[in-house]
Length: 153
Length: 153
Length: 111
Length: 111
Ligand SMILES: Nc1ncnc2c1ncn2[C@@H]1O[C@H](COP(=O)(O)OP(=O)(O)O)[C@@H](O)[C@H]1O
Ligand SMILES: Nc1ncnc2c1ncn2[C@@H]1O[C@H](COP(=O)(O)OP(=O)(O)O)[C@@H](O)[C@H]1O
Image 1 (tube, each protein chain N blue to C red):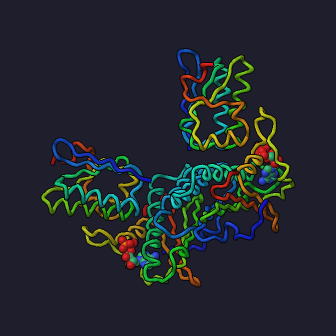
Image 2 (cartoon, rainbow over the protein chains, first blue to last red):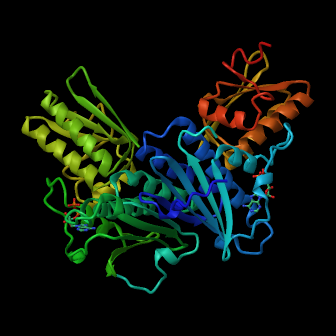
């Protein structure tokens, strides 16, 4: 984990922020946001694009699938926020949701058995990112994703 | 103008909200948000879709083109917010920007000469919507767009 | 996202097909394409709107600009295959009379 | 947005081509398509990833699910035409060994 006191994604110039219902259907719109980021930053390399997009979608997919499962809230009140930004040396995303606190040890995210059909999301995001941070702040979960551009992660 | 004390777009359940730089390139992402609204509300009629999407894009286009023209802010600090929502009887949008106050009389928005190449945006949005409201609140412009579903506007 | 297919037919008529959304960004490109056609001697132009999924006032402006320069050169600009959604925009601006929608590209210059 | 092209060739091999993004939503449909193919007697399947612009862990899960049921029926599932972006996901999960990428659909069952 690096923690270098850089501003979070939701404080960066040029950031894109979306707030929307936490539903599977929203995925395509978030892919569209990421595509917009590539349009406005044509110099970002293909590997950085691939690992950033995949990690964002994994973390969002987990929110949609797991953050509300045991809760008794009405689906219409389940919302998430996402902020995305690119700077000269990094790609950052912050995802926030109003779901249950997550009792996970991220450092323990390991790839499951080769023939497992699920359970790879967090391990994949951890392997692809330079840093994945999780914090519970108030009644919200915050996920901070960092790709250092051109790093070997 | 109707003013029926319904909640604004940014207070409705299921709303989509985006905050982003006010640039021409952002248009496609807003089209994508509107498309997402149609995906999640397949029962909205074609004419309502057409007049709502066109009006949102006109008002956003004006923000991008006119709200900052005379100002000395750096382009990177020019941001807008958009909230979109559909209910059983209406489509609503609220756009907000940090540009200059607009000195416009919306009721005076009339179609220009047939062969004019510009100047139709506000008249078109006014004709297509059931209500278009403008307010200056603090240092922001707020535009409230209303389509009553199935109305003859 | 938009693409423009541009073709000059044997009878000298230019056919421009905007594929996607005609908004503020893409209207600029349509305006350039129409100017270049007219400047290059193609004075009769059909804009095939059959693959245009969205049109706003800047798209209308580009069409009117093309219409004027085509007419100034003794030609004309016609539109064809307009979808109901796009037709709404012509009707709301009363431009359905200035730019009458034709059913097909082939018949657009029949009258 | 995604489309799936599904085809059973003369030699009995099923070819599934996901066109677009394989994420949480579309992976469910891929899983169903693969199950139906195997249930219908097609035990050798090539998934042509040449038009797949995105893949995540749920897409991987659907492929592994298809691989297992194909093998249980005495067949196999192979992947072909993997782009560099999608290859990254196989490498990060070490699944590039379980699902070795083939250069073409036609040669996917040559060995
Ligand atoms: N946002 C979240 N909220 C609650 N639980 C989570 C969240 N993300 C992951 N988890 C838990 O961690 C487990 C592993 O997640 P992951 O590696 O993404 O695989 P999968 O989603 O396929 O199960 C999940 O099954 C879930 O129990
Ligand atoms: N958001 C805005 N901020 C400042 N001025 C505006 C705004 N929207 C419209 N205007 C003014 O109103 C005029 C008419 O706008 P419109 O009808 O949309 O046509 P056009 O944008 O083609 O000029 C603009 O030229 C501009 O001077």
